[in-house]
Length: 314
Image (cartoon, rainbow, N blue to C red):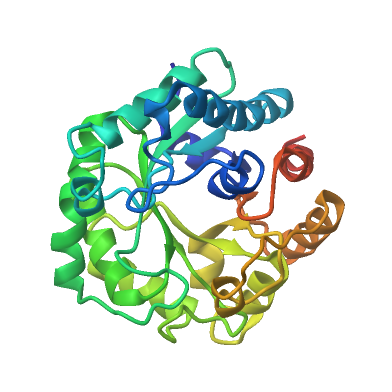
């Protein structure tokens, strides 16, 4: 068991490691067929696939343990909301609870603090943001899934690659209803905007104002460090608010825009040394607390990220 809560550890730690790529490694390394509705959330019900999924998570757990860094692990459930689960072959399973229990079991043999995040995402395509939902629609849609996560025993909630403001706001309002700490992570372009054209500063400002329990922080995932670096340096985002509230990245190994990633037919990557060098450049100007990997990364990338963070804590 963790000695401190997720909120306590977040508030007292200068660096937190989070996982590297999961789904793209399953797709490209292990060649595992993924479910049309809930992608990889059902793999825990197949023993071979469960062990392959566990092997990836253990690589990241081993890195955090070796570097003595707190680790954030997300349930493999970004597309597994109530609607999609009901339409899948797993409709009679407790998919969210079972995935949380799966990760909880993995962390038992480690001494470094490991916190499990209930991962969810936008209703439609995160890479286009073409279909927008009102705050109220998003709240009503996401709340049932988030209440299921609360019952599953996760330590916090994580909204991944949110492309537009109104749905992110509705998500945040639903997340605060659960009483759990939560993080909102955006899909961000080089121009410093979400996919709907909202600047990072404006998104943070509006969500903070419309929630009584705001996110513990904001971050971005599936974005290359150079793209996020440029986005944060935009005059509209180079503000005290963004510096205070934006605190993490899960780095994509490809320096491509969201539109380019969406249209890419093959996985793009870069070496661990190359990506770590770009992450260092970002962290020099913006010392983000949470760092991990996204598409195109593996244990080699995360190991170098962990070394960067561990040097910060020494």
